[in-house]
Length: 157
Length: 157
DNA sequence: TCCTTATTAGGAACCATTCCTAATTAGCAG
DNA sequence: CTGCTAATTAGGAATGGTTCCTAATAAGGA
Image (cartoon, rainbow over all chains, first blue to last red; front, side):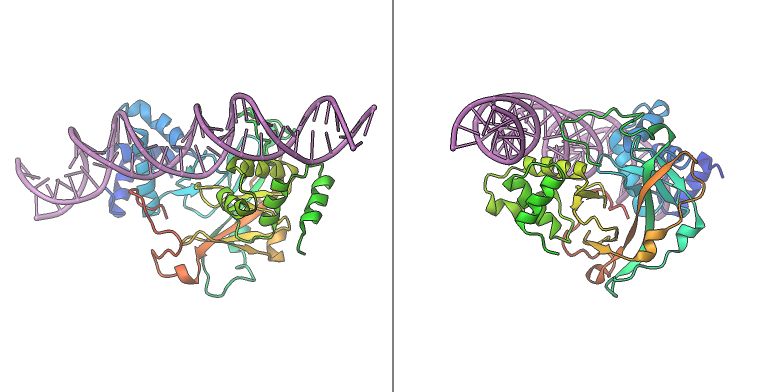
């Protein structure tokens, strides 16, 4: 289900959002990506077509779309925020080596019992499972494909 | 199972870690807390007994303990890192209002099937379920107990 | 077509975290 | 008990992702 720019403009109107070229382009890149890009990733991918684009606009757009419920933040670590426009329920597998995120759509994970031992007045609205491990290329311990470990502090886990 | 400072020194030696007063105090606070404190929280709680303590030491200590496997980072958002020394398998319930984290220990969540649709060379080492919702006091929409919403960007979700 | 208000771009500010460095101290060997 | 060596500590500076501030621009409705 590829969304054209016109489809996206339509969607924005449905959601009561103004449709601007920048906003459309950013969402277009995000919704057709499975890489869970960072704000900077999006900036880099949209920039060629919009040379005047500012990183600020990317952040602002993401926060507007987030409020509207069209985009979600994905929590991997505390480095930088990564974003996802795939709203169909799914879970994530995170490689501890290269930090890549793989979407997992397994219906068995979408019907978990609500947890026991919870205050009864707590209202749960959603949940997500985060699997962690090592992908094929990062399998050998301490190996990292994209990011070479720099830093004076010992790497946590 | 309250751990005394001596118990902790013992534990550090088992793990081949040097035992310093600061390190012991930080871990002591963390392991007896269920609040998943930030580095600054820990700093504030340990400072009275160690007036010379530096925030840097807290970060360094957390990274050492993290590497040793005694402490884990909890990912809530991309604001600041929160830490947990509770190593027994458990999951988290996060209030979207006050950002508090509640531990959940439900054995049913500890035997999830490994997800389908995963590259076969991916090796999963752990997983965690993060439930999100609103606690009793934050239940009414837009209400927040601890943090009043400041910021010019629309709040994402 | 005009008006109002949101959006944009750019630069400055913020703040959690990390880096750098010298002084201190834990743990070990003698 | 004493001295050695490497890790730890404290403090201050630097980093970098994100947000704030502001004026100019453009979208959508009247």
